[in-house]
Image 1 (cartoon, rainbow, N blue to C red):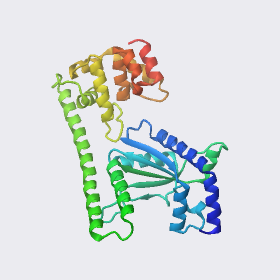
Image 2 (tube, one colour):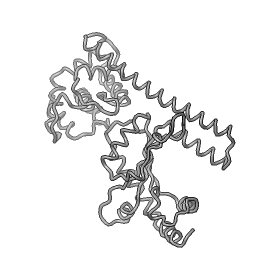
Image 3 (cartoon, helix red, strand yellow):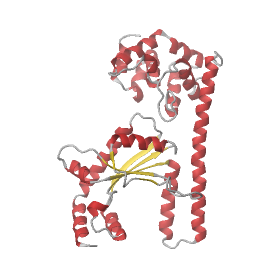
Image 4 (spheres, rainbow, N blue to C red):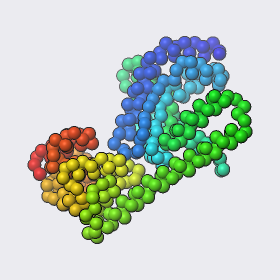
Length: 336
């Protein structure tokens, strides 16, 4: 290790606590950027690179000027449930942070024809920094490497890294081929999960067509039925998440159960609530107070379901985190 690198490492080690605090701030900023976007996020985490790992990388990469060469002293990882959500996350982050395009890379796009392996998108960016606190000073001078990949890709990367590390250099050809075969299999699994989700969306839209023709109103209320009813009665409702459904599928599952608890057991009963003047009035009052142009017909599924639940049971309404909106509570309290 050279003199410059050695001195820099001593400084980094002495400031490591500030870097760890900066990593927490990075996670907060990323979570805020993705909040409410329904991007099928499974996990967001961030860390500061440990000094021993930093020293090892300096030696391995022969860094002479670490301050300029490191782009992963602060690292964040975003794990999505589905592979197709990765691109949406990347787009959101590009809109909120200053991204260094030369340092960033799409590992999936770099895979050649007939090649399988590590699939991930890496963005190198600068987090926002205000004031002169130690954390802000770290954020100003330090890049953040953000890795975005699906649960399946993440599992493969973690297992593959662990096994290759244990085997060491000179991995036998047969084992290398087995790694590649596994990577290809998991890529197919990722695609199949995405296909199942797509088929679910198609099922929702097919059921919505049935309701539009006044059929199947005796369906018991569950996830698909709730989504289809919202599409049927409020086609102009703004879609949420990558599927552009009235609600994220996991939210629809929870809301359907809540509506049943509120005495709405089937689609027919839900349609009555969706068509009621009380629900319409609450949604209208909400859209008049949100502070930006929004027609009542465009109100989200969360607002509409919240209006229905609130009329049935304010006690249940207040226990649901998704309804934690003072404007919605105000619109509800003004009378149905």
